[in-house]
Length: 365
Image 1 (tube, rainbow, N blue to C red):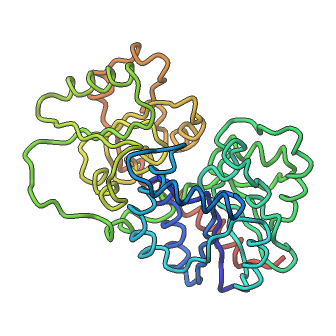
Image 2 (cartoon, rainbow, N blue to C red):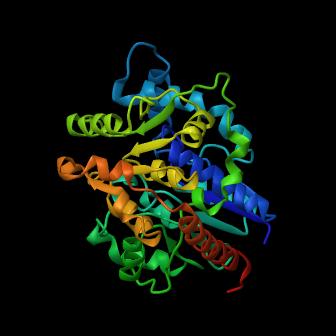
């Protein structure tokens, strides 16, 4: 086994999606594999792609988010080039994917991680995320930490089709326990639960991204990374800040942030307390041993949080966005996390997940 392709959602404005791709690529490279990143894009015909590309470059507008997405691509371009150096041409159709598998002579393809199996995210060509373009008798088909994003499979009419596609996989794993249950529903009883790639690598993997502060502040930092801002969340954040005290300054990130990926990672690394409603915000808080509170985000999927928190006995760190007023802010702030215990549990999950992936890549059919 030498050459492995990675397929994930298009890398646009999502810091977590970008960093999990870099982490998985880095992990495989560390273990001696040649990694080829399949440059996945949303399926559009050639002329529609050209039109949207032109619109995206027009300043002072943001038609259907095109300008915003373009600015994010420009922002992350250097980081992707440096840390995912081996990428294919842009792939916009099943025919493109079939062609690249032959051209690259791949030994295996890994689909994952992140919400690559969330139905409402993949409607533009869901078959590719179940590797329909790959002959399983010639190329190993593996899912690593694939997420459905929801506790149930959302497209009942596709059950038989997707079950047949998954039957051709050499190994199947999911990021959430709900995902494992869905895989079992789709006839993969051997599906395993593994950690997100951002947690598969050890914390020192991220040392290469950290930016040294030019000025050291005496104030501590309350970092907020909140994707869906609304009044109740703002009130909750203000209450946490008030409880922490004036020694803490608030630093806010969000979907509209113009921070680079290294700046984003550094913000979590340097934070003294974190509030987030993001799965990867939670993951990096745990990775860097930060006191944190995660706000359960029902729209984006709560099981993404609870599955990992349950494995680490950290469920008490999650609050429900629909009833934030019922929680004792004082208790949340005063409760200390025993990271010696958490790190031991996380290392066991990391080793189990690494063993799954290495066995999937190295075993024969």
